[in-house]
Length: 270
Image (cartoon, rainbow, N blue to C red; front, side, top):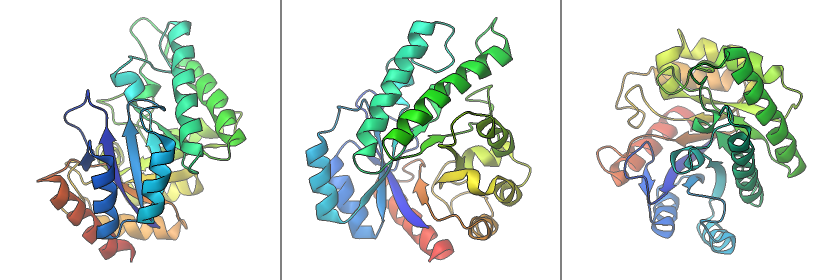
């Protein structure tokens, strides 16, 4: 397993579960100094960062790009894959497709979390799930064509009324036409929704393609009450070999949060 830390680069967003903020170069330098393997980026759009500059910074630091988040599509533009308006759904697919292309240049998958949307009032749940399925099928094909996976994230009940747990998520992606969509196991969301984090991980198995490393209160691991040793054991048992990425609040400060994260990662995985 490889360590990863998040960097938020969306000027419109002032708070949220990302460790480093705003300064790409300084954040990458700090991450490398602490011994992280990679960074995960949350950007306003696919063209918000010059890819040549990012290549240079990653090459200089020895870090990889683990994944790119797409949530700005919803936060800034109001786009989701389950909007009742077909024009908005098409725009959401286009936005995510651009993010897939950006990430694929670095071998990094795109993450679909908040852009999945919700079952809107007056819309049949099965219809909303069909729209989500259609979007993921289209985007999974796009990702495969560019040599990466597409990551789908079950969110807790307070953030979506679509799919909230790994078991439902596994069944859902297994029903897609594409085989190139994997699940994101976010420990914060799982703490709310799963009866047993380790058992849910074991049951999902190879469907898990990315892990978000945050404690029960969404602070860095070790600052809440998740039984991380049991979670780490389960991840090792399923042979998970991907990134363990700190999507957590920068508590008490970004630097201290990063230090706490890498200490915890080294404790459980190295």
